[in-house]
Image (cartoon, rainbow, N blue to C red; front, side, top):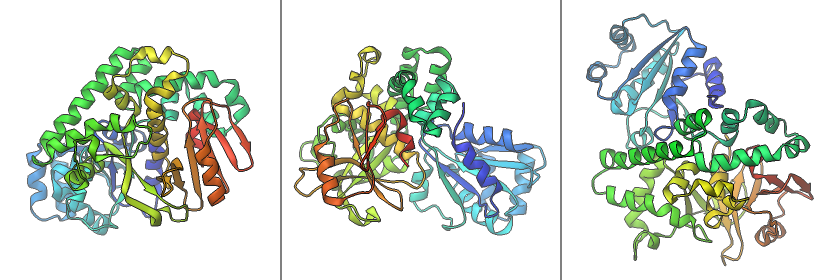
Length: 430
């Protein structure tokens, strides 16, 4: 299975400014597979250490963090020599031994010749809880579920993904039914690697749904196992409310939908926990369109999306027969799947900051506003072929953006600074 992230790992390996790398991402998005596959492709040797329930490694890192001593201990543990230039060191579930995270500082300062990659299912939480290592001594990379382009490579062939990369829109339009069919499948299957692999091999939607249910059950178990006991009930309530939040016409997160009379202070910790472990994307509102958008962020208003469109479909009980019903799938529960899909694809693009816009009266809403660092681009999401977009017209008249994007099931078209981008090409937005 091809992951675009492996190209970033090659760039990391070759960088003269290389630091120990931490890969962040939700459970089961493929972090372990990616590290091992990269090691297999790019190094003569791989030393893989899983810190989960590993008493020897806990003891090794418990005393002083001298790098020579740590390397010797790891060599004894795995039974082979670690060649700094030709061996990839993988620390998995590294959050289980916080001093292993702390050691990365000393590897960077005293032994930069070693190539070290770390990951962990709940690493984001461990980092936010103040695990001791200085900022600036490590590199970070986020890993998400497979994007649509990666899914397309797995189920239809890399030539279709390469065609999207080339942005040959006349050719893309000629083969649009292939893309539409794959997009429908992606809405159901999503991008969790186990689900994609199963579907690519067997095309069995029932098996895919079983995998998704197991993943969701594992997430629920993580709540009980890792979150503070006082937060667990609120975590479940926030998590289970997300489908109904997205089913509203206005998808702004409403605390009262979780529980009557619910207030921000009751659920802030639970939402932060879900964000830290990569299970949800929090997209905040902005009330203006200047650069940087973060300066105009309204911290009280936001939307919550889950990590994967397939998991959202599973949470809502989306039936596979919906795939056969024309393009109605894209309008399923007020276009929530489509907005989830677009959010998920935009999140995979490096250097893109994601928000949404409403004016103060609430009469104009733009589904997403992206800050590329050089420009602010409004993105209107249309789940059907009807392209009338009153809010986008109002926004353009007010802010005069050089580029506006409307993504829908219609073919590619460009006119006077407004680009209609088919949903299956949304990754090519910049």
